[in-house]
Amino acid sequence: MGQKVNPISFRLQVHKNWSSRWFANKRDFSKWLAEDIKMRELIEAKFASRPTINQIEIERSANQVTITIHTAKAGVVIGRGGAGVQDLKKQLEKISSLPVRINIEEVKRPEIAAKLVAENIARQMERRINFRRATKMAAQNAMNAGAKGIRIEVSGRLNNAEMARREKVIEGSVPLHTLRADIDFHSARANAPGVGIIGVKVWIYKGERSDA
Image 1 (cartoon, helix red, strand yellow):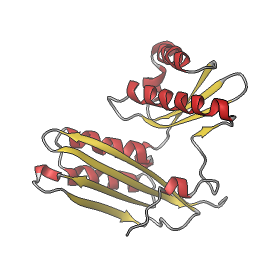
Image 2 (tube, one colour; image 1 turned 60 degrees about the vertical axis):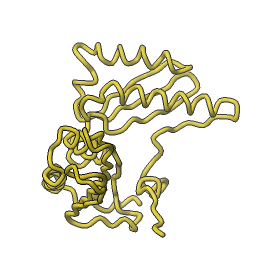
Image 3 (tube, one colour; image 1 turned 180 degrees about the horizontal axis):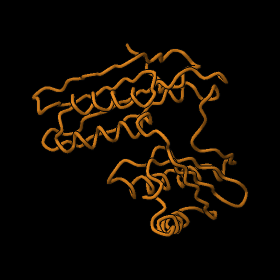
């Protein structure tokens, strides 16, 4: 029986970090956790039409919540004259029990961000683009952008087949068992018309970390 673990949680406290960073007592824990989930869902839903959000980090201090949004297209999130951020801040403060501060950080190389790659493949498959073309193109772009290795798996009723199957594309090396290896991972879902849900998993190896 396969023993599978998320490559990011496997490397926590080695060189990865939690996406939510705060400490709470028993009374506040469940409330703050629910707030975090709702805020993440709101941000993801707001920019769901095209994959631009790579990571959302939430930090809580005594008097405010700091949300850092890592995005491939900062202009889309900020909006004209900062109107997009102000509107987002108002919506988030309706959920949060503390004032919200938003930081926007641009992702320099979206081709090697696993979440953006997985969601981009999923969106292409929803538009009925051939899965082999979508995965091979994403793998080639990642290698050209400086990735040491990439592994992409898609599973479901591929190309309208009667029976579900799993296909994978591997370029370079992806050492999942090496803790000092900097591996980014994400899974996405494509709601393909006529065939149901197709799962997409992406592992991207960016090289070994010297600080691990």
